[in-house]
Amino acid sequence: MVEVEPLLHADPYLQFHAPYWMRELHILAYKQFLDSYQSVTLQAMADAFGVSPDFIDHHASQFIAAGRLTAKIDKFGGTVLTNRPDLKNAQYRDMIQKGDMLLNRIQKLARVVDL
Image (tube, rainbow, N blue to C red; front, side, top):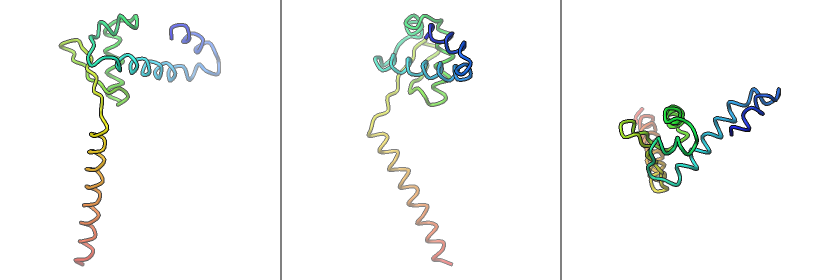
C-alpha cells in the first residue's frame, strides 16, 4: 500500500479516487488480519502494519463505528476484540423483524375492520 499510494496521487484520473481506494484497502487488510484472532493487542496490530497504535486505534474505531469492521476496541486493555456474527443470530434477527412487520400489518387491518 505504501508503494501504491504515491502512484494513485500522481495519476490525474485516479487522484480523486485515491482516498477511497486507500480506505477500502485498509478495511480489507484489517479484516484479513482480525480473522485470524479473537483478540489482538493494538501494539501487535500496529507492529504488523508498521504504524503507531494510535493510528490503528483511530482508523479502526472509524471503521467499527461505520459498521465496516465487526470488532470492539478495549482502550483500557489496549486490545481489539473480534465479534463474528454467526448465521443463527442473523436468522433470529431476520425472523424477529419479519414478525414485527406482520404484527404491524395485522394491527392496521384490525383498525380498518373496526371502522
